[in-house]
Length: 139
Image (cartoon, rainbow, N blue to C red; front, side, top):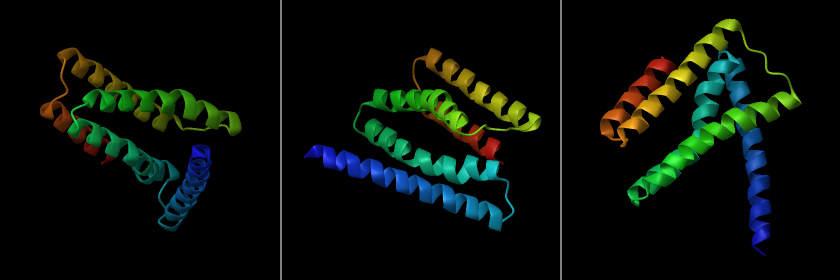
């Protein structure tokens, strides 16, 4: 009987994702905002919100390793699974400037995370630094 909930959840996820993409494209067109910017903000934050809630909830319950696994696993899935499957369906074209900027930011974030891991604890100062870096990137 539990499989019904799984199937219903997958169907809801599909239609919710479809609505998110359609509305994001509509916002981008109406406001003359580049689709990449909409993807980085509206879609990026919208799809990351459940992960954020799981990570915060795990940290509040005293199991921050779940949050860390969520972060690393999500990035691996986004880079290796989402990009690969999307490009199999339709080629992803990016301009040279976008590719250089966003690849550099992604690599810098990965290096920063490795440096933070080397310290052995991801504390408030590291969290502040990462939030400031995100704000700077979005600005």
